[in-house]
Image 1 (cartoon, rainbow, N blue to C red):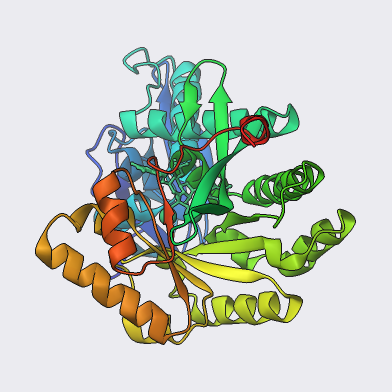
Image 2 (image 1 turned 180 degrees about the vertical axis):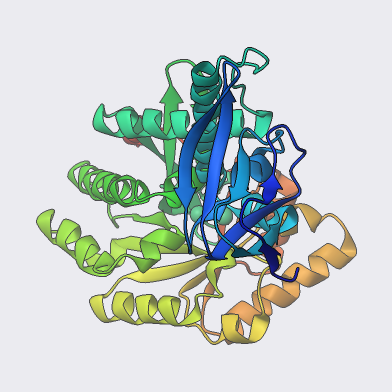
Length: 382
Ligand code: C2E
Ligand code: MG
Ligand code: MG
């Protein structure tokens, strides 16, 4: 929209007008007023650089004040859609904060002007959801401090020998009111803030304690434990050093810790390459999680030197169809050609296990082999 010029004394917009644009003051002075108990009250004078009329544009309410040019002035109109698009793309929590502040300001203004038409500020449903998220986030913070998170172990079967070669560590949160919260939900939440860092520290610490407990129990060879690393953790400097420090603190062999990276992160190619190099230099192994979930560009993915590739559950399920089986067979061959081993995820039936054995897949993980359980029950069933 082209700039607009207003002569001194001219109205830019009036109280109760329907909002279509906000304005940026380029030159001149603008006076903002409202009518209070029948009298005009000055809310402020604005000069170059100031934004005006944005409130009504943000929450689509009628103008709560009037704007008049004090001197000749030039304004740049900003269409409401320009704000709407950015607001829609913003972090929902930030948007909810903005809306909450706006509604508080409006009710303060209504009280001041004696305007009784104003409804008490009510949040839109999406803003309520954003606050639900913030609530869950502080509950997660508390859970972490109060030790209410827990790690479970799910066995990974070495198919040819029939031995349990290792376990995947899976985090659990038993919420006092909500019950079990899925890690998919709360890990994503933790990832949106720096909370993922202490959560990751907790996971690492528990995994090393568990390895140590298995060793004390006399498990020989000592099984490996795989832990999941998410996007934000990958970006934290010193991740591998912290892993090594924890392993060394328990005097554990480094190759008993395996790092799982989900396939959706492969676009962070150089970060992952760096992590793999560091892990290998330190003697740790790295697995590619959820292989085949559809994000990957096969070329860059296969350029990464993963020790193990974890076939996503959906492929395991598809093996009852000839095409599904053929695809898994091709993935096993590809995995082998790359010098990696394959773990099939989500193995629930004997038929699936038999097919995997026939296809020479090395490992199986899933409910058929065992559900995720506490460390104590792993120790008890030994
Ligand atoms: P994932 O790493 O792919 O973990 C495998 C998921 O499949 C787990 O879900 C597991 O319980 C489930 N599963 C295992 N066997 C079967 C089966 O036979 N059938 C079916 N239907 N499901 C099976 P869970 O524990 O809910 O974890 C979900 C995701 O949350 C994980 O996917 C992982 O991405 C993430 N996650 C879990 N724990 C952690 C953690 O400690 N740190 C991080 N960063 N992410 C974690
Ligand atoms: Mg995993
Ligand atoms: Mg997986």
